[in-house]
Length: 241
Image 1 (cartoon, rainbow, N blue to C red):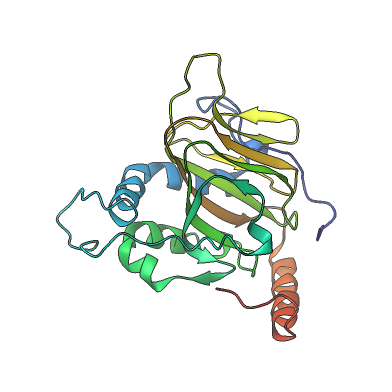
Image 2: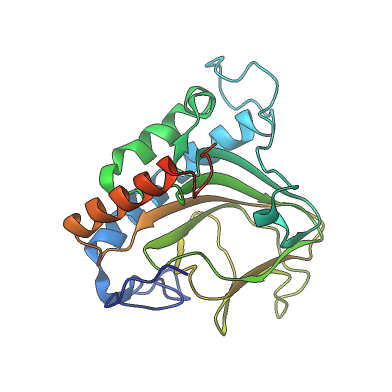
């Protein structure tokens, strides 16, 4: 794992209670601003997902009259062997590269992400996609490749638990378990071991967004990007999709 020393480190950067006054770790304004903007646009983002991915028209824009978008999750890649069941990705940013088709089909979502500017993690390890974990599916415990980013989940569709005490659909980072709540972001450091499960009979959908860790300076970002650019040029990272 690529590790930059000196960065503040927590499994989750959001409190379990989405209504807590101290919801964002360290009350960090950088993270807080992204979370607030995503949550403020929850309805629009969910509507675009339903149209573009599910084929359920919620407007008369005509943007998604074409057939539903196909998943760009590649199950034969060695980096995608941790899941069991059915896990679909519909990506705006995949390995640092942006999808023009996603931007066309989901203009509000893509414009919002673009508006975050250099807060968006800008390396070949950068992702932003609709993550659909279907019924009876799971992602086994694993660690991200680096501690340079924070990963945000904006839950769009969360199946109900079979009973109040159950946790049939959730995420565990380090030793901490959380449940998603529609419209309320979870921010995590995926360099910690983490796993996800959906034991319900319905799909769970989140918009996943990678941002730079707030402690990485502008100078460090530039140096890191230069390092990854050189590595990509040398063929050490493979090609971004």
